[in-house]
Structure formats: C-alpha cells, structure tokens
Length: 244
Ligand code: SF4
Image 1 (tube, protein in one colour):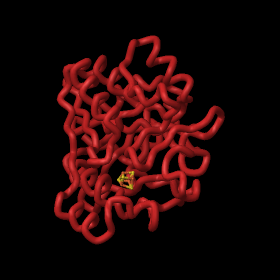
Image 2 (cartoon, helix red, strand yellow; image 1 turned 180 degrees about the vertical axis):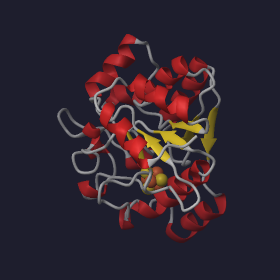
Image 3 (cartoon, rainbow, N blue to C red; image 1 turned 120 degrees about the vertical axis):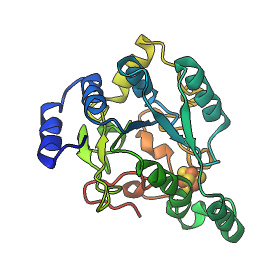
Image 4 (cartoon, helix red, strand yellow; image 1 turned 30 degrees about the horizontal axis):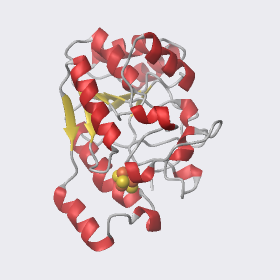
C-alpha cells in the first residue's frame, strides 16, 4: 500500500507524542515492503519493539567495512538474541577500491566525509531502498539541534523518493530522549554495543567516531574535525540542510 501526503501529515500530527510502538504498528499495517535500518547503536530498541509487533520483520545494516570490532560483535549478538536475519549491505567494491587507490584510507580527514560516506553508505542504502515502500530509522530530535530538531515521526523521504517510487520514512523515536532509550534498554534487557560503556554515544565508523565527555552533545563524537551543521552522512535530508 501507499499513503498520500495528507495521510502522512495526519499520522505525523496525531502521533507527535505517541509511543514508538504505535508508530511502528502503523508502518507494519500499511507498508508490506518495509524494513528497519539498524545502525548498531542505541536504536537497537527498535529491533526489540519490532520483534514484538511483527515476528517477520526485516532489518538491514550498512557494513561500510570501517566499523569498530565491538560493533561487528554487537551485530552478531543482536542476530542471535532476536533470531533475526540481518541483511548486511556492502558498498560497491570497485568504487571503494578506486577511492582508496587514489586518495588512501583516510581521505575524509583532509577533504570531508561526504565522498567516503557516499560510496560506503549512501549508494548501498539507495540500492536497498529501491526495493521498499517505507523504512524505519532510529533518528531522534535530541541527537542534534543543528540537523534533527524538527524531525517528525513519519515523513515522505525527500532524499530517496524518485519520480517512479514514493518512499515513506518512519522515525518512531523522533520525540524520545536518550534517557528514555536507555531506560527501555535496561527495562527490557536489550543487548547493546559495549562501546557505550566507554563513553561512546552516537556510534558510526571506527575512524570517524570518538567518545564524548559528560554533557557534550552526542553528535560531537562524530566527524569531530568538521562543522556541527554538516554532521550527517547523507542518509537523511534535513529541513533545508542538504547533505553535502
Ligand atoms: S563515517 Fe567515515 S569511514 Fe564511515 S563511510 Fe563515512 S567517512 Fe567513510
């Protein structure tokens, strides 16, 4: 099924403070070609919630080839804990080889993360999303005042929709705080990435993620050598801020 713009807006408005499970139920009931994007960080709560709503749920992850060993171990724990098939997506090997051959393994420290993220994340994601009507992300408003403050619980995906394919994006944790996410993890014995015990909050690729200090914003640990307004990897369009 699909939903028109009016329906998407109505869901977003009527569920602005709703439990994430209620938002997931809308997604499951209305979009048969639906999958959860799992990043290997605290958005694991969505894996837990979805497993209780739809035993046949689909979940995918982007393996950039640059994840931390702890993240790979965590992905395996999640696969075993939930008895779920993780659809792990890899980048185009020729594109990675060309990038590394011409610019080396750490070009992002010199000329920004967009080129590497485009190859290792955005292209495989685009390939996956072409198969779907809707996807689910773990984005939250409190992750970044610069790029996520107005994030709705459901929206048309302005970045990956095409003339022939209208794609809907659900953000069921949009209005949750980090404290609520961690309360859920504790209350439900949800497995988590052990990097969280070492001061990491927002976890991405190993060379582009570092721990943050108490009271630092969580996205400060990502691409710390770049301006705050550009700390997105190109997977999401944000209210006037185009991925570079
Ligand atoms: S986060 Fe860093 S290593 Fe990972 S794809 Fe982006 S630039 Fe490359």
